[in-house]
Length: 216
Image (cartoon, rainbow, N blue to C red):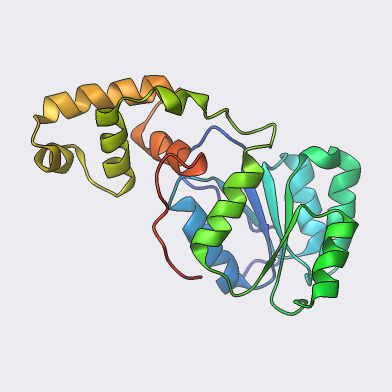
């Protein structure tokens, strides 16, 4: 595996900046990347602390998921470096499977992290934490438009998020595919996005639909 910066941007684009995953465990990065990319987040990765800082300086992330024990620069050092550059506006979440005592959690928060997640964890919990922190990030979009969806539009958005295509939604709701298409265009306009994938990402990010429960 390439020892340098591991940067892989997903095809799906969302209306917020990338989430930076920092961990020297490639399997863990892949699991979290798949979880977040599945609902539309753009992901960048680093497997060392110094590389994480380089990635974050090259493009400001919307949120950082940061393992405490990474090579070259520890997660604590990375956190302090990013705080020096971006201040308190950048959400930083420590993740650790080794430093799991109460003292570790308190220490991480005192150093400057916004949150501390202990491995292993439930994916629904991680998604909830990510959404909560992204909601205050300057790079994320206000979710107020979601309140203007009609009941039918909300139903269609939920079915889109569940993976149904236009024809399957029509069959599910006993309406024509053309009517579904019209509703989808209205949903895109109300959410301020350009594609169905972005609408699903927006809905997940702002809690307009339920996340599918799974374990990481």
